[in-house]
Every structure is written in structure tokens, then in C-alpha cells.
Image (cartoon, rainbow, N blue to C red; front, side, top):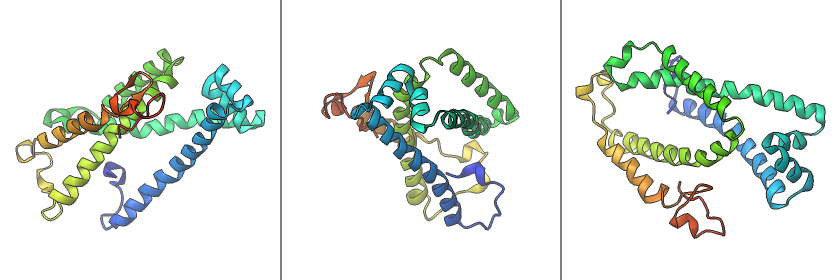
Length: 225
């Protein structure tokens, strides 16, 4: 899963070290922000703490963070730093765009990597500018759908790597020779099956509450993953 981000590591780097660096590098910030976000959400929505609730109802997430960070000068500084951190977070995705396009086939190898990354950057910028008033709602509505895909994709890769490739390994010389590669039909069917069996019936979003999700609480519970 580390893929191209570790290409400059020495070839003798231990697998457990690459795993540990990746795991803790993702876990530490993700766990911290998730826990803080859950606390803020509960204080704002469930407990309806007036300063937080009022800020969120009038100015959305930005005003909520402005009040929560406290005091005003420190809050503004934190919000500015947070805004600047977003492009840095997206750079990795846009960088991978160039590599992903080259996986489409031999014909795509001729496409310079910066071109797909540039196109994706322009696309994201246009969406951000046009939808800036509703961006938070759109992200909230679709982020769980991305989660369905991520967990399905990860499980498929684990099964492929540990079960089917566990003893025979990979033919590293065939990576760019299409006739020597599998079609991946089974993996695609597994992904679709996962979506149809669990993802869609368990989907509980503002715009879509499916049968399994509808049985949980008054507003449905998202158990698609």
C-alpha cells in the first residue's frame, strides 16, 4: 500500500519498518483530529452548548472552530494554518494522479506525469470555487461512500497478497506486459458485490437512507462499511 511514496527508501528496508512508519504517521494525526471532532460535534449538536451551537448555526464549521480554539487571536492563527495545510494534504493525491493515469496501459506511458496532475488541480480548483458555499455539505454526503470503496479495496488487496500471492509471489518482470497480467475480473466482481451486499443497503446519508441503515435510530445509521 505504501507504493511509490517509498521508492527512494533503501531496498533492504524491512517491511515492518515501512508499515510502522506509515501506520503511525497516519494514525497519530487522524486519531487526534477524529476524537477532537467527535467531542466538538457532541458539544455542538447533542449537548447544544450555546456558544458552539450558535456559532455553528450561523457560520458553519469555520465559525465553530473560531469559537472553539479561543481566544480570538489564537483562533484566527489556527484557522489560517489549517487553511494552508489543506493544499499540502492534497498534493499527495494530485501527485498520485500522474502515476495512476500511467497504469491505464502502454499508450498512457507517453503522457508526461505533470499533465494529469495539472488537469486534476484545475478541476479541483474549479469545484472548490464554484461550490464554496456548499462544499462542506457535499464532502459530508460523499465521504462515507469513499470509505466503502477504501475498505473494499483494502480487503481485496489483502486477500490477493496474503492468500493468492502468499507463496508464489509476483512476477516483477511482467508488470508492464498486459498479456502476462490478469484481467482483474474477480477483483472487480468482489468490489461490486461488496457494494451491493453491504455498502448500498447499509448506506445512511442525508440524501439516501437504505433499508438496513433505516432500522437504526430515528435518522438511520450508516453501516455501509
